[in-house]
Image 1 (cartoon, rainbow, N blue to C red):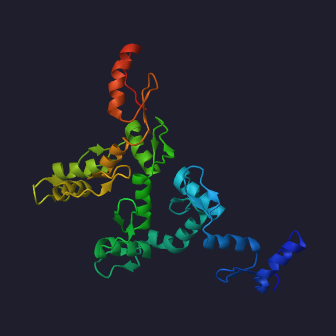
Image 2: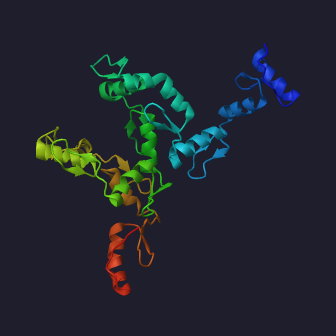
Image 3: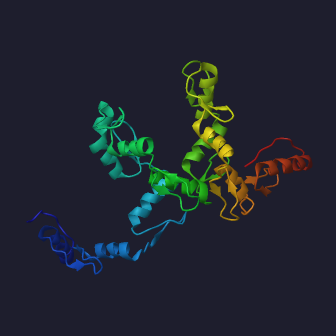
Length: 321
C-alpha cells in the first residue's frame, strides 16, 4: 500500500493516502460523481453551473480551469510552441500533444506506415482522425458544424472556429513586427510578412520561377506548363486555376449571397465584400498616414489623403501603416 512519498504535513499525507485507499468523500450533488479532494469537486461543479472564472485578457473567451486558459493563450495568441520532437523537430504548444505525437503517431510518421485505410477509395492515413475527416469531407459530404451567424457549414469544428475568428470577430490580437498592422490570426500575419520580406517560398518544378503566393504558382503551372486542372464555368466557359475563385464566380450566376451583415442584413457574394462593407458600421481605422498620423478606414482613402499631405510636408515617399 505504501509508495515512499514524503508529505509536508499530516493533512497532505491523509489526502495522499486516498490514492491508495480509493476513498472519495466529496460527492457532486448534481450527478453523484465522487472525488478524493474538495478542489476537484469545485472544478467539476463548474460543468453543471456553466461558471467560467478564468477570462482571457486578449479576447472574450473564458474557461472553467486555469490550465485551459493558459493553453488557449499559448495556442491562439502567443503562438509559442516550446515542446520540440527530438526525432523530427516538429514543435507543439503542449507537452501532452508532444507525448501523444511520440507514442501514437511518431513511429508511423517516420516509417511511412499508414494503418488507417479508407474503405471507399485507396487513400490511407497515419491517424484515425485524418481518415474520419477524409471520409466526412470527400465521400459523405457531411458538414455537421454550422456557423450561427451566417449559416455556413463545415466538416470540422476547428475549421468552424477559424471561420468565426476570421470572419465574424473584430478581435485582432496579432500584429505585424514590420509595420504594426493588426490581424485576426497568426497565419495571416505570416502571409502578410512576405510583403515586407519579399519572400517567394513557392518554386515552379518546371522552371526557375518562384512565387510569393501558392495560388500564383498554381496559375503559372496551368498557363505556362499545362500542369494541373482548370475549373471551367459551364455557363460562361470562364476558366479558373483555383477552386475557391471558381466557387465565388459561380455564386454570381446562381445569385447566392451567403455572407450577411449583422448590422443591416445586406448580403454579399464573398467574405471580403462583407468585410469591406462592415467598415460602414465600424469606427475601426487600420490605415495610418506616416506624415501626420491621421487614421483611415480604407487604404485608398489614406492614399488620397497622402497626396495632399506630402505636398505640405515636402515629400513624395508613400509609407502606410
